[in-house]
Length: 208
Image (cartoon, rainbow, N blue to C red):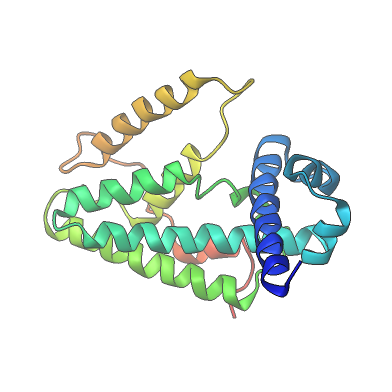
């Protein structure tokens, strides 16, 4: 096999590993053995360890990819001319990507500088989406960017019990209800203060 062929095979193996790791960690828990990931990906343990020396490295890579997809979702939302449709697209895309599924590892792994940088890019883009929706009067004024991020995190959790096609239908139904609840003006006063960015970031560690 030539150099390009080996590189292509390595890229395919890495993609299989990442998909398997996300599925295993978010369904079996973050204590799941890496052997379960290799088995699901259909690769040997040697292939896994050549790419990721530790479980932490694998989780760091998964978190970074999740943040990058949040940035892409926010940019796609901002490209929508309608402020509400742009915000709804962002929320639906992040929920479909299960962008908050890795939140439970907060505080258990070291956050790299690249992860912090990408997280800030995601937050800044999401803030622009929320500010635009507030200015247009379509998002209730007492809802913050972090409220929406935490809401999406809840939707990223796997459904209880074995996988079933009905789970996705139920999720989309509840998501439609949640999106309507975000619309201005809002009927129920929200209890307490909006979550602070400092609290949100402290879950992961101390930013550089």
